[in-house]
Amino acid sequence: MLTEPSRAGQRRSKAGSCKLGNAGETLLHLTDAVAVSLLYPDVVYVSLRQSHQTKTFIAMFSKSITLSLSIVTRRLIAFKKWMKANGVDCSDALDLVEDQNDAVSVKASRDLKEGDVVANISKTACLTVKTSGAREMIESAELDGPLALSVAIMYERGLGQESPWAGYLQILPFQEDLPLVWPLDELDSLLSGTEIHKDVKKDHGLVYEDWEENIVPLTPLLPENVDRGSFGIKEYLAAKSLIASRSFEIDDYHGWGMVPLADLFNHKTGEEDVHFTAELPHSESDSEADETDNSDAASAATDEEDETSSKNSTSPEQSLEDENTDEEAKEEEDSSMLQDDVSSLEMIMVKNVPAGAEVYNTYGLIGNAALLHRYGFTELDNLYNIVNIDLDLVTEWSTSSFTTRYTRARLALFKKLGYNSEYFEVSSTGEPETELLMLLNILLLPDDTYNKLDLALTGDCVSKEGREITIGKHKVKFGESCSSDVLLTDGVCEALLAIVDKREGLYGTSSSLEDDVVKVESCVLPRDRRLYHSLVLRVSERRILEKLRSNVRERLGEVSGGKRRKKMNSKS
Image (cartoon, rainbow, N blue to C red; front, side):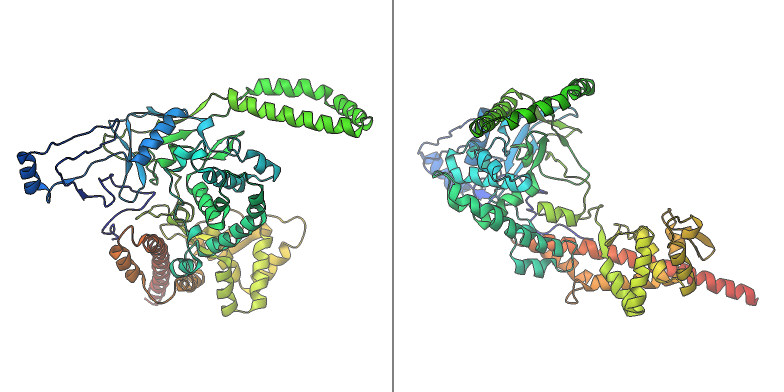
């Protein structure tokens, strides 16, 4: 059984309480005149005058007094002031807590009930392309999506204290420690064989291309008060990591953006305490929208013809004037939408949370591969872990067992039957995807059955009977649901075991599953953060492969045992 490491400090899954001082648990030495600023909610000064009693007290207890207080640091003070000034209403039932690693989490300062609204966040407080000072530059470059939001973040960071979001940005880490920002040598040494290794390396290349093609050309266009260093490759990777792990979809107008306060809630798979709600601004009822569409549709063609004839008779000067007018009208419309949109985003409790407990959001029911890839952490005993077996591995096994020509022909038949998967999922319980079992049955079909099925699929119209084969005593129709028990023949089981061995081999031979478990338990956080989460991912994947292997062997034993019993009964 995997246990937590000696010091749990993963950033986005479990944050401890804030301690006095940088080291967390800190001795508070009381000197002749001590000013202790608790800083929450107001600054309170406790002064001890020089006296014989004070000196005696210090001598007796200065080496043994340890205060473990949840205090608000200057960062949090600045953020709370910023929220108040920018339309972010945070309930006093929420306590923002900073741990020894400067990570911020949210705890309940009193009992919270389901349905409680614990935060209202103005959309104008959100950092989006529409609200950023970089909007004009972004739209001129025709950037959109995460790339555009990255520019907005880098631009505001480059403004420093001049940015309207300075009080918010200073509470965020420079970057989230996603594999995206790891050096390539660490990716290879820590993630080799895992679900995300190839994807992250591909991401690295694409991000660098994006930066070179889209970000570098913007640097000469930056205003003098924006630090050009904020548009470097490291800064771009950092912005991408924040977007991947913290951004929310706000509405149709703003799109995706950074939502202050909402992004401080840590994740817990399947344990959502608070829910983020985003209202769409200027929504119309379906009937109103339909009426508008119908009334406008009648004159659309006429208007289009009038516009065309008008444009044909317009001078170049008039055309330029019209373009300017259109741009001004668009700017006024966008500005009006932003100013008139007084709707706010809400954080609503979806379950009761007792005072003192951390309040969790959830990023969805996802396994450790997705958690590490997108958010930079893993969870022990995650029930939503999966392992994928690539089509390449199946092809490799088939080619080594038969011939390349044979394998290509069977794969072509597989695609004729409507299957197009490049990988096959194995669930957390070790159950292989039915499509993988179908493919293995096709690869193992006798030649005459294969030829008959291939011929039946040659015509334009294929009957259900044409897609049917016999497996054991069962008729199986491709494209329809079928029990795994029927598809798990002896041959398929043997093939699965060989393919699982190939998949396991991707982790290398330097350590076994048992070795990895020991390494996880010996990790010290946050020092071994990357190693720890990489090992947790690898262990979770290898355990699934072991479950699959065990299930298949058990199935083989049942089938073989049944055959043996039949033979014994026939002899008697």
